[in-house]
Image 1 (cartoon, rainbow, N blue to C red):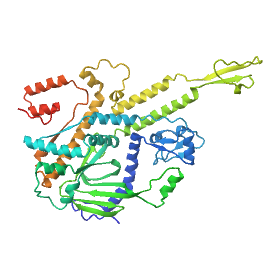
Image 2 (tube, one colour):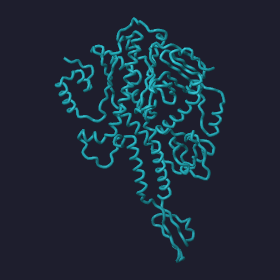
Image 3 (spheres, rainbow, N blue to C red):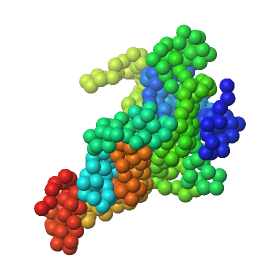
Image 4 (cartoon, one colour):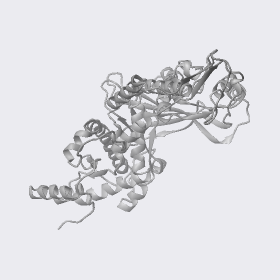
Length: 512
């Protein structure tokens, strides 16, 4: 069956366009974003069986392939990849032996270091409501919502997904509220703080992976999402007995196929209505009373005129391929040259004589000789080229090995805070750009949650009271004495004591 779009009266949806999104566009962006994730995670797959690819891989003595092998030349891997395939779907290159494959994943630690730099410490969500009691209550509600969804882990997952894909979407899904609030807003009798906290803990903040996101943007403004679609395949807790074409192909390649049942899921959301399809059959739908689309879009680094932000992984892929290629070439060279070899001339049975200390060979042939060759030799050009590739990755990503705690040479005296900031200048500037986009996304999530509770009659608030501030701690080590002196100066200048204590990390402390 096709899409039944009569319920979406607030937006104009074309069924043929939705079919194209689900059947064509989803496959295109799926391949693109899957490549980005593979270069970040670099998963390893064991290759077993008697196929040609398995025999080729086993030539090196390592019965597995890695995702980043996709970018290595065939002269190293002995395999060929099509533009739409990955390292796990390859053909053998005839008459080419598989060499030493070396993968050094310089992308993953840079992405993780950037996420730790951004959300390595807990953030503070500060309400800007005029009344102090209301501020404390709203902050407590939002703290419960984010704690129920993983707390700091939620923000770190958001940072990793955004860094890999260039953006991350968050669907605010009030699971318990939706059962009561799909028809009309409630005048809920329970409006106490304890009731609001109980309902707030049931709100699900679902991070949407980029491969499943299919936003329908306004034709005149790419920043406005008129309708949000997510399309994915969900595995069920049941086993299928059907023998599929894919399972036979995987069995022929020596790989195990997943025999769990899989259902094709398509969800469509607008500001007033939602639908869920499974295997293209409408299984659930309902009205939304919130008056807005409950989706928050967060760009990793802002990119004008594009829905997607700037990915931290994509610009590093060519450099990562070049680094892995040179490391693999060096490993092959070392394999051939690290052991000394001997060429014996005019010595009978030389090939059977052992080579060890204290051994001597003798012969009556005056023209006999033993020639030594091999052994690793210095290659400064190779080392310089690898070092320059790493330096290029540092500049492109803004993440240097120093961020991960790797010290190279003498860095001088870094006891000064100014000197430390200059050393981390690239990372700090990129981190500030991310703070702007992620804090705006977190602020919008908080405002949506408070608006939903207001619509449901659980906790009343107006638009002005829902304004929030997101406070990040300094990722660099700080001198506590200097912070206290700075707080004292701010207090003397007239800064409210609540704000001073909040900046010091003392939340909930009553002031005289």
